[in-house]
Amino acid sequence: MFIRLIIVAFLSVINSASPAQTATYGTAADAKAMLEKVVVAMKADPAKTIARINKGDVEFKDRDIYPSCAGPDGKNVAHPDSTIGLVQKGIKDATGKPYGAEFASVASEGKISEVSYMYPRPGADTAPVQKVAFVTKVANHVCLVGYYK
Image 1 (cartoon, rainbow, N blue to C red):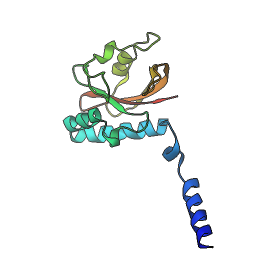
Image 2: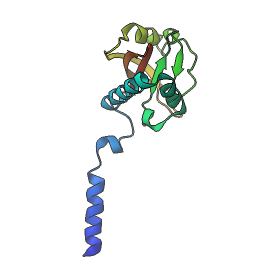
Image 3: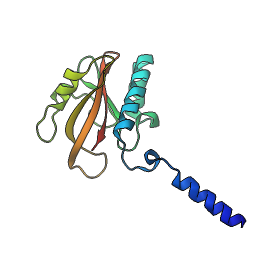
Image 4: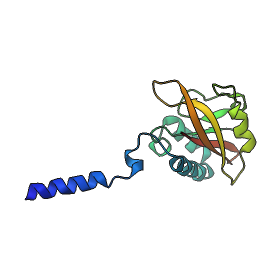
């Protein structure tokens, strides 16, 4: 009887896990929530936040979602991969869409905008897939967090 109770309790815990806890990929809601964390952190300490993003800090990396920020000079200063130093306005997707320029044009302090583009998911598969980024301006930086559709 005791073992049966333990099994029932275990199955209850497994079945009560939220979709966000078990999903392989981040959602639009996850991306927007992360951007809101980035905004709060950037307002408090931009340099520390940028360093944490670049290190892949768990607060700023969740499955396949992560933030990116371009500094006042338009160059990427925060991203968990090799795009640091690229001029954001010059970045294009696989179809030639200048999505980096769109980030800069829609970014506005206190407002979150959306930009769609094609970008590979993190991992071995480098095929571009549709991605949507939530974009804002904070502490004189253009920051965004995207999710893959």
